[in-house]
Amino acid sequence: MMSEQESLRCSSARNRGGVQRVEGKLRASVEKGDYYEAHQMYRTLFFRYMSQAKHAEARELMYNGALLFFSYNQQNSAADLSMLVLESLEKSETKVEDDILEHLAKLFSLMDPNSPERVAFVSRALKWSTGGSGKLGHPKLHQLLAVTLWKEQNYSESRYHFLHSSDGEGCAQMLVEYSASRGFRSEVDMFVAQAVLQFLCLKNKNSASVVFSTYTEKHPSIEKGPPFVQPLLNFIWFLLLAVDGGKLTVFTVLCEQYQPSLKRDPMYNEYLDRIGQLFFGVPPKQSSSYGGLLGNLLNSLMGSGEDEEAAAEEAQEDSSPIELD
Image (cartoon, rainbow, N blue to C red; front, side, top):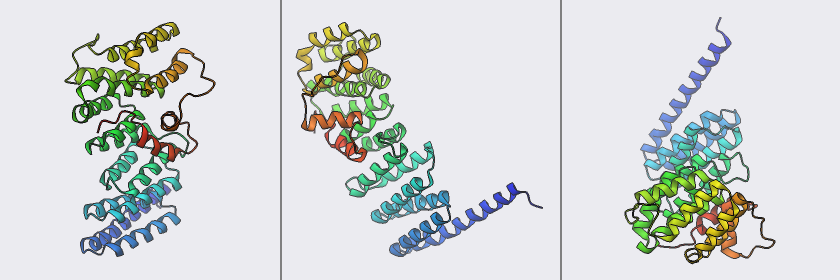
């Protein structure tokens, strides 16, 4: 007699064979140009598999179907099946794994950059990647999204996602390209200063250090340092050392000495207020002196908004106080 394990293996093989036969028929329909019919059949099979708790089969079928529709430039059908991939993940409580995140990033990369479906997809994917919590998404998914947006030269949104990843080196390389292609030579220091301060506001000290060292080493307009020709770069270098030491007097003197450089962007002192609280024990101010877009930016950057999706979208739009397009 067949053991239970062997029986399960045979059943799984039969299911896989069944999925492959169905995929063959659907592929033939798409290749003939019967897009609508094939799309409806994919949806029917998805709900059938889900009702039978065949979540992995449903996800695989929708993922391959979306890739097929993308290859025939059927954006709407492909985006719809991409959403069903997310639905299968949400309803099956599937654990976050790198290969799934890579599949989601692949679907994102194939979507029309200007489509509303892409915005909805990325918001839902990030929410799933943190177990539906109020956090702003899994760092690995953010990193994959950032790389795609970088390739599309959508630098401001790429930077937002790099900030929520752990890839300081990739972020720095993107910022070098961003600065060289869109910025003024006089502002090369501001690109990295903003990123370092925002990483520190997110309590990501390691990425703050890596983004600074990589950017200053690789940017063609920055002479080898430290010390640097640009005072703002020297401030950031000293700040990173001070964060390691944690001495409030050093932090206070540093901020006072470099006020002329810090006045170049009104957000710098707001970031430094937050950094003082996080790393130097400075008590928070009783009332916030900023509001509007600047307040929204800090809230979304720190993930303190009530609605995660709105926070993510706001930050993508507003996280760049220096507009250099």
